[in-house]
Image (cartoon, rainbow, N blue to C red; front, side, top):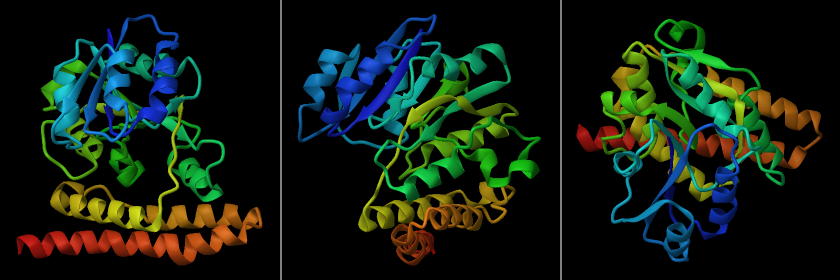
Length: 288
């Protein structure tokens, strides 16, 4: 069995399409869908109870602990974690995602390629293209020098892992403000196993965050990475941020998209960097 786990908050607008797409997947195993529903202002809980195999109410959401609790309630040999705002690209998404876990005993976790929804900004589309290229990337303790920080890049917006290994490595049984997936990726690599970025498994997923939302998000990332700074030391960023800025800027320039280019360079990038550093400093002040 495959257990698909979805944390939900104000997700009414997504649930019909998402559950329909999951149910239509061509995969040779039974699928169960588990919805962990935080208190919402819409009909999320009612719809989740109608559409999913199990839906339950979450009193206090936490990125790690909530997903871990849902996994404990599941029955599947394979655990698939997704967010409410993704949509499978086709009906082979799940089969392609699970296949490496079945075929290779050393691959413990795998995650999907993300492409922007039609209608997303060009900036968001190009960021997704950079972070989720059209080729696979196998990551383990032998590829740290090759991939640097990308070696632990892992997104549970659409991911799968083996149940036995998930709980054997402690799962998501930890409290974090964000990036529970990166924490789990570190545990997988440190255990001597592999993670596969799986470009054959594709989902739609994108955000056009407001400035305020981006600042809050990158503050959280900065604070999180400071908490695990000792574990990140051997994963060189190799100027990944600068590479992304160059890649996205070149594509916007090529498109003569001056408006988005100016917003990206003069507002988006500086605000992310400022918020990230602010998050790091806030955490250090709190504990020094």
